[in-house]
Length: 226
Length: 104
Image 1 (spheres, each protein chain N blue to C red):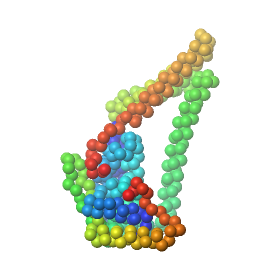
Image 2: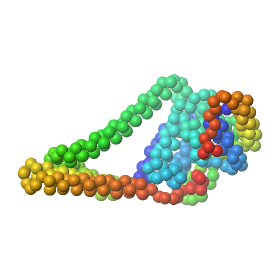
Image 3: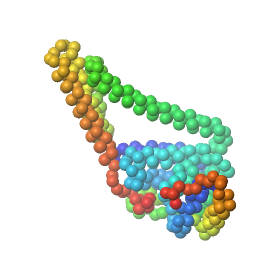
Image 4: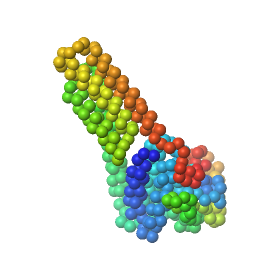
């Protein structure tokens, strides 16, 4: 699965953070135990497509951190150092604040993406701005080039970028034509609409590739995790 | 007995001698890892559960740890669940939070 190594590394980081809060006598054991579960979750085909499995695996790792930090009561990991059970309320508030911040950041990204797509549609309907169209083409040509680099090789990003380059190119041609007074405006409006339609089609391909990038069957410990 | 403990006992009692991995228990009991592992740790501390490391079946595979109820654990689990069921029968109006159907 693409990006598996990075996802596992993120999970390992969270687990290692969780284990730092455990008493030394059980730390290594727990670390090995939780680490062994990460690839099993990542390959558990019963969970769903690859992105969902990555989320599940990261949720597992993050929740071990919650468990070692916030587990209340006398039966929690007794003897955890750094006073894990002192100042519980303050820690809860801190964790809530981090959660709210992360959620805010996620919503911010989503809103920015929506605003970007909305502005693209606005440009399509109301007439293209030369600067905006040129920026779109250049930025997505750069991301298209980056997606050819083996380290960041991603078919999903390639298709997304190609779509946006097509949309940007359509808008750019329309903007140049309208500023120079060339040809019939309807012709260039149609060209920009065709560019955007291509962009939508490429976005569809990108989504399909993202979903299909997951292996259909479990390859590691499938029978053990069922 | 807490709802998470009830779910874990029920999962274990489905097949008391079968060893269970942490992730299997998580799925079967519908509990997050941050709840399940402290719970298993305290059950193990009370000698109701034992754990052991499996031998990896393939090269490069990490050994996984599995859990099993001890004979005392089986008795305690059955007793606790029976007491809980009796309490629920005596106080039917009291709101309870049983394990979800897919957690059994």
